[in-house]
Length: 344
Image (cartoon, rainbow, N blue to C red; front, top):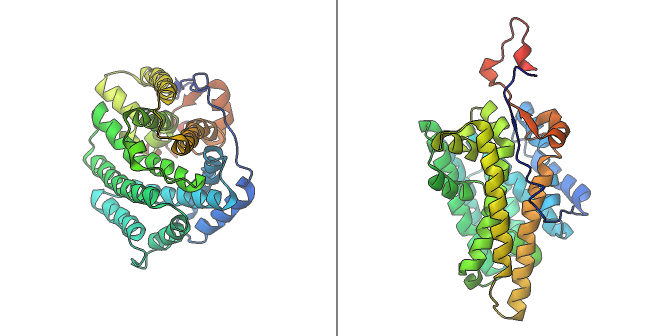
């Protein structure tokens, strides 16, 4: 293994005091959702294998452990839908990614839209489940975030096409949207039966806690997924690459930086939660439940990342134990002739 470059992951668990949990409906409702998305035959066999390795339903089990059966199933459907959009657009140029995104967006915005595409059908199924019980405020915010998400996924494809890596500030803004974390947070109210007033989301202290939680998910996701993405030639949309380029540092230094930054975000998040103002007893209870939901997402994302093969392949348990990631070679660097030792 010594011939492969390696780096040590930051230990994010040590600086995360948030408690993890798993949804009791995972097995049954998760299987339903997996069967549902697989029935559309979106992927080729190799893509499907990778898709299933990701265990999207397990991610939902960790990040929405409090969701009831129906709500949990809807969240599984949504995360499966997101992965479809993400996987398809990852291989498209800016123009095609925008067209893919527009199908999703048109379907979400208009119940009568139908272009006959598989993506439209999948999105329609989700929309029906979500809109059946989402409150007017939360539905409006969700659709708004859908637009921002598609805009930034399209932007990501354009940057990839141009071989451009954004500076840190610009990248953070883009990542907050194209990661879809705002959409995942947008499911909280649907799951909890809340419809918080807009003034809550406009409050500066609420925003501090909200963005700290969202950024913790994004930064953790990027350092964990870096090897998978660089092996596919998709590492431009990753905070690790951005840090290495714009701070002129190596891979290990970038990983260490993410560990320190994550710790700062966690401290900021916990502090902001203590400083939240009051909107009256009823709304305050809803806000507290919403904030607990963000905590479950931050912790659940960490736990899930080491329980599937999505980021670290078959060695995921070894990586969890050692914290060491050996970089996979690019497919074009794997040689069939000679010993083929690079291909592991």
